[in-house]
Amino acid sequence: MQQPVESLVRLLESYRGRDKVIRTVCYGSQLVGGALSRRVELKGSSSQQLGKSLLLFSAQLSHCRTVLRLFDDLSMLAYSHSYGLGSGEEDAGVRWISVLNNVADQLYYPCEHVAWAADAELISVKSDKWWLFSTVLWGTSLILGILRSLRVLLLLKKKLRKSERDDGRSSRSRLFRQMQLEILSIFSRMADLGNAIHWMPPGFLWAGRFPSWLVGLLGTTSSLIDLIRMNATSSTESSSQ
Image 1: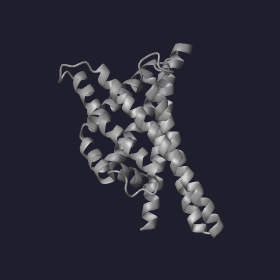
Image 2: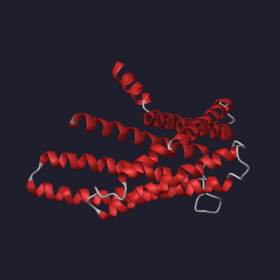
Image 3: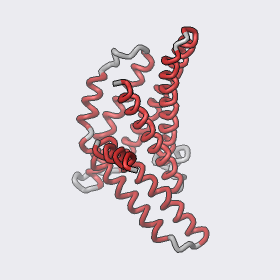
Image 4: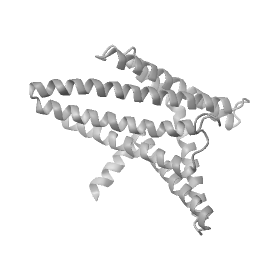
């Protein structure tokens, strides 16, 4: 019991880890709250107040993450600067997809900041178009991330076939782990992309058609996968030291 608690404490002590935990609780609350609200509509359950409270709690956590992201611009800029044009990448496709992904992520933050400031009445502009810009950039980043993972998977498969010929067991094990992480990344981004399209203006694909519980389900799935990937990555790094 002590080890899981210590792992959770270490996760919460880091900014990225805390954000992922908040995100998981946020979408989990939306999933349960949306499901309870739907049950109320269908059966007239007495859980209406609990469902409403969970949805409100989810909205507050979402707002909390938006405010915390006001301070993410510099860290994203530092990452984009260190990556540059991806000269360290072996494959040109992975390099340029990553560069475009970094551009989309970098532009996302100021657009969201303007939208937040407009909603908070700190600036006198309409927030709708800025929320749209940020959603489009988020969706673009997700699509680029999926394309990058697919490209990396193809490259890993080539390396795996080569290692099978060379009979490199430890190399195959490492490649399998990398492939699993990329597959998880694809599923995570696909779940988020479903929600990104839902938040687009009505008339675009399935925009606005998802019930709250489905938004919560997709977000919870994505968040749990990201936590699994984070844990797997940290375990791999600690074992290699």
